[in-house]
Length: 413
Image (cartoon, rainbow, N blue to C red):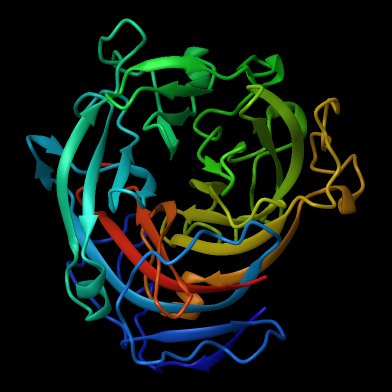
């Protein structure tokens, strides 16, 4: 539960425009300078000591940690069609911060259709961010290539999640393409963008008529624990054999996979309840969905931030942030089905990953969230809080935008 500590009564109505797409609003800092929340019965919420400079002062908590408070900082947007080095900036589905170089890497989910599969590199002026000004500068773009060194052909990859390793290599998760019988993957790439290795994937994830991933509802998320030992991804919705997809009044049960990186093997799988679609489309029967679109490790003990994004035609996007824990969850690697085909859970509810809602972006921030799918930690501020950056996937749609939302998060051990 989140309660107000201080904030603004300023309103930005989410339904005053056509909501089957999110209109472009090239506005920066359209809220008051800060909105602060305190989670549950946590201790006294963070108060600024006046030093607003951002600097890296230490690692994430290596032991168990949880969110104490969340503060809104700023929003910056890029209109669809913005380019850098002749590459269109769009489809951003993952963002990673490299504290050594102080650069951000942003993965596009372009399936080599609007250009080669690629990721961008950018800097964020954290001092300017604290002043409420534009802070993002794109500096590079890197093409993703198959093992033989050639760019991915059209529709052969759907890059969605990304993490970087200390040696400069990085992992990417791809949703695959169920309609084309292309399996999802979690593969390793060199700093130059060439695929060099792949992690194992159980056959149950491979798209089949009666089992496997649903189209466009597979590995959206990817995160790495602070000790760099565990790589974690999850399906956006349940596998076909794990019950129905999310719908009105119907949750779906996704699977979260833990990879032990030293052995390059799956160490565990956990069930995750994705919430039902919150709003019905304006016209019954039209598109509606909700899904787990990103995970972000908080500690080495199974605590994560989980981002769920819902969409209904005529209603727009609904985005919520959760804190989840796998510490008491049951390993489901060898469980064939999590729910039956009408959605009845087949394992005890307490066997699932636990979750607590932290933030509803529309309700609590009074903003209109675009299709938020990317999330990463930035540097620590001098007061001990950490920057949290979220970015939207504009679907290369002229009625949407690439939206950056900056939050300040205080963790407590």
